[in-house]
Image 1 (tube, rainbow, N blue to C red):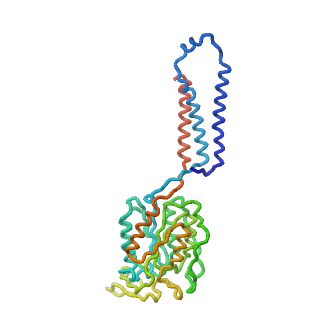
Image 2 (spheres, one colour):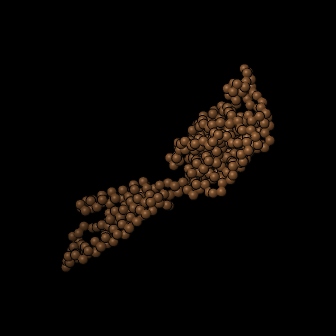
Image 3 (tube, one colour):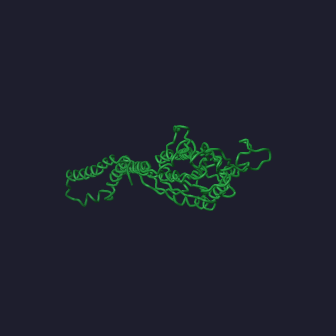
Length: 379
């Protein structure tokens, strides 16, 4: 047990003072007692009375004062919160590169199947949310236990241009803040120069060298599972977003999906949103793209934005206290998704006991006063 206001524990000094004052009053009564020559006659005339009964109201009063002193110090106990009572935000990359066929039939279809399996196998009380991101990020399904709504949203996903990993993290943090009063919303975050688009020769993000801000304060039980197949191409930098998540004690579990040799990308009309990008005629079912053409929405040049940026994702995990996982095929992805909640089976969270102690103290004081009035009135 810990205390938010430990200095207030000094008020516990009232307890021994009250005990000493009561004992002094008893001795004073004995000192001024009137002697009587026939004690047997006095005892016979007095009604039977318990030896402890006169002291019970005072004992209850002192106990109530002690509990109030503890309550003022705002005691906190740490309890294990099961993952079923927490929220898991699934942040899914839907950039155009998710149509790469190195994971058959393509990355997006394999990810959708794995996410459906994950949703269907979770405990009925587990709250799951869905964030999707390409050039920007959006909360599609707030944390919910409605499995049908989640699976329908997963099945209806379409791809877009760009990969905003940092924005996806911040959107997921806000989704948690909406259901967890202990988490502060993100608010507005200024974009870096050039809209956050990396330069062609930009080096991968370094691993953090200092502990995350949230490491010393413990983590909330809600987590973010981030699935991406590429590198950040715009928006807030992933490590900047990870620092914000760490400040709010939220862990991020990134998953790098896909192989190191992306093949041609084959997108269905549904995955591209039909004719939304002007790439299909009536009745068309799909279109192939050359991975080298930058169809994933990334900048050209030295970095291949169709491959997983593992250094950055590992840094995101290290900054937030999560763990990075790599999935080269659909089976690995399914296994990783099923195992992540087991890594966070329980999470210790502080629970303030002030209200409980204050209520117990109030009950003791009421009982003490009630007994004193009843017994002193001869009832």
